[in-house]
Image (spheres, rainbow, N blue to C red):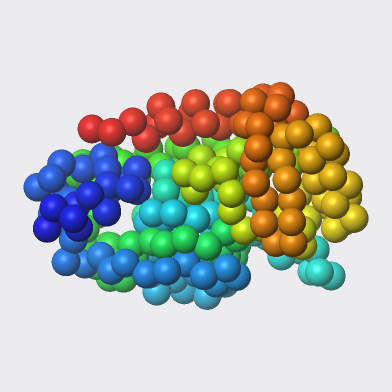
Length: 238
């Protein structure tokens, strides 16, 4: 039981619960791997489960047609994939897809609904915090994508990914990063090379290593600090 509790506490939403409240949820939670490219929710299709990431990155993307896919938000261990179910909409409007592999605790929508019947309960309180943090990210992403350079946005994305992975090395293809930044793959290659030339990262086929976090941070826009501070404040444990 202690091991199950410590595993669940790797997710910030669940970590906000007392041992007693979290123990009550454990029988309905199942740990599963998040494999690269897995679609957890498809736009227009009813969600069957919600996910509490422990490691990895899930991107919420809008498919605009014509091979145009734009990221609207990313979710890691600070949140939940399936906030729309909490907000009363079982059918998401966007796709949720694993961008960086990891693991998660999953719960059926039926069990999840049963767990949030108490509108003033501790889980619903943490989910409200999570929704606020996600709203800040989506709002900031919209402004960032319009104003800041590809280099700034790429640096921010890499820093946020490193935070969620607890590691400076993680698998990432140029194709996926290009989709997330809504730019051509050649532009991502140029930015990756520029960051490598600056000594901030090294890049080999399918893998990124952040060699100098402070240099990478100096290349990122201030959206990284704004999103991280807002999320940390919203998701502060009980």
